Image (cartoon, rainbow, N blue to C red):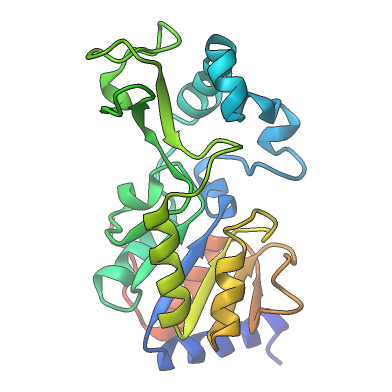
Length: 255
């Protein structure tokens, strides 16, 4: 007799096989296998660091204190993170036309590093710094973070990571593109997110309201599971995506 996970995998595979427009929606859970901890819950980043350092007003009033923690968490600690099998499978699915786009809450750049092209970064990207005065953008690799806070080489303005701080709005382009995906997709693949961060959490819910089937991959139930999820694959992203690929006979990443 097949266990519940195997039955759900077969059900999810059937949904994907019949889909015309698949969109992936990813959260911190997909990057855990790359060594990046989630933000909330046991062992999460906010159990070790005060999220106040990412409040936009605090950042402008206390740039040295804010940057000290930003450098530690997002650049010293995460610098060696690489895409894992889950990121790589989504990139392969996109390259073969089976996945239309990825909407990610993550700021770690790992989807791009894995080879994905059509990535909507809802909360921005930590690998880019923007001048708060003249808006010039820098790759973080080109900025010396030994001296904090880093300053713009053109105007001397304070540099800020190009991701959303508390108190900032979501970029309009990301909102519009995500909204379009929630209307166009007939399947939403929700991976590694608790569904507790707004307004991002509204995107899969809107997709479900528009008729999309929700395939959720999460080790535990989320805010989506009971009311919006069609099939819940209870497990880690890499394992579940690999098993789905094998059932569907879809290409897997090559070494």
